[in-house]
Length: 363
Image 1: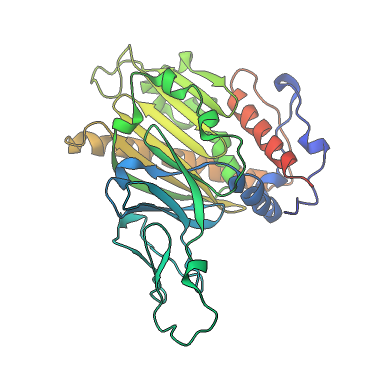
Image 2: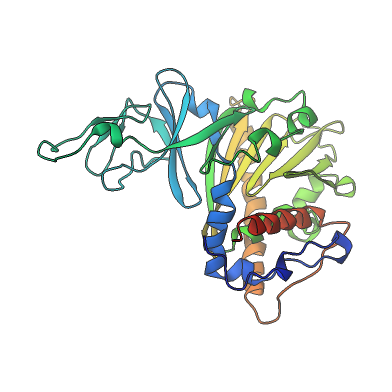
């Protein structure tokens, strides 16, 4: 792993929030930082890929991209979850190409090699005359897989820290009695955004922009009581509702919990529902954001449609401003800025974790 040549020790220094500067603009725009992010950040952290409700039966699977690598998680015949690189050991073809589905076995979509659900190689068409070949040496390459509150995570590396429990420590107790594993998957909506993944995360982590960018959202949230709390590996933005009285968008005694789990996972927890946002880096100036929607009740189609429509409106507003910000980050006029102590503690916390990840990957 080769760090970008412009990554200096000075840029990795962490100053107290009141005196800190934001990270340099080149971290958002240079291709060498995109490549470094994949290895130093995404290749070393737990990544959210789905929900156990999508993997209820033997042969159910979900796919994802982690640090640029295609992965698949499948329920095997013993009832365990298995995670593998979604890559055939023959010539790199995919086992499955859909985001989720069901299979009896994993079969390469290129040349037809078949693998059992435990990853062992089963069938090799037209390999009769190949010498010194042992199927036991060509099983799918496994990955670590773990669950929390019904959410399924994978990890590419073998490091012990941070553990998944450390990443999410305290969240379950804070949102109790809500339990996320009781919710049911409804739909995935994916957005392609013309900005660096870090610019999108920065935007999520502060309510500073809400009055200008999301006026309708401000009519539902109690923005005056909007608070940010930071923990070791995650942060929380918390707000009460202004009380719509419809029992769904929240009453006076309910709240919205917006959790960010480093480096790219968002858990938007509201009464009766959960949105998970997974921010996938694509290039230095593009990311892909996967919104997965979960509900406690899927019977009211009108209510679900209204919720998705409102969420889409907010997301389109975020996309527009993030794409403008990316243009600003590439300009000659900007390199580093300052933080609002009152409003941007979450952004500062994320950027400190990013600096620590970069430093740990330095030779």
